[in-house]
Length: 66
Image (cartoon, rainbow, N blue to C red; front, side, top):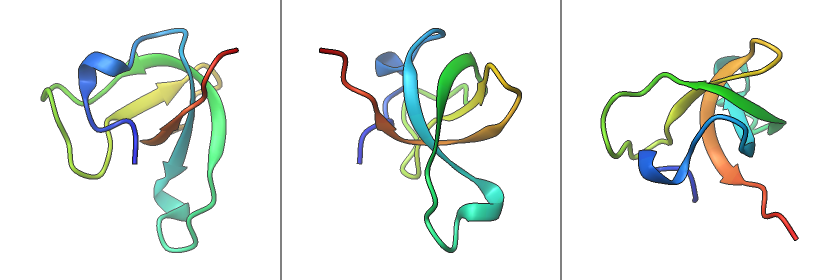
């Protein structure tokens, strides 16, 4: 799982997040980070972020750029 270290995530980065409502089924929502909401340097379930469209969830993957 990527997205557990705050130093790897920054505004403008494209990521996949798991919304609170999708924690059981594991559906991933993709978008661009607008703000980091987790203040600690590491979180075992993923850093919580707000996407540009306003959705909030924990980062489960970082979309690699070519």
